[in-house]
Amino acid sequence: IDEQALTEQQKQHSKDPFPIYTVIDKQCKQSKDGDPWFEINPYEAGYSLTGAFVDTGHFGSQFHEGSKKNDEGELDMLYLQ
Image: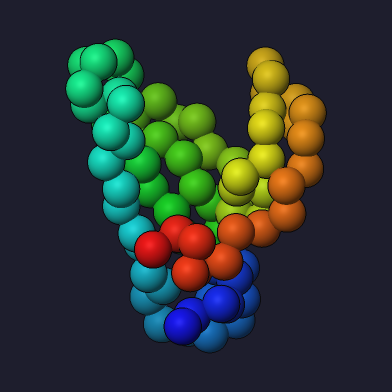
């Protein structure tokens, strides 16, 4: 079980290419509303076509008009899988 946080991979991959995880947002794909491709890496998470990204450490928090409303803490790899 991998309970490591994504930001912990920043140090592991400082000189090597780091992992980029891609996910299809099921709701966006079904409604054909917006960019269905979601990208996660050790530094940021977000939608590549729209350029809407947050620091990976804040991924899972709630935002409204660019301001963080609720800090949920960083999600671990087990949750993301």
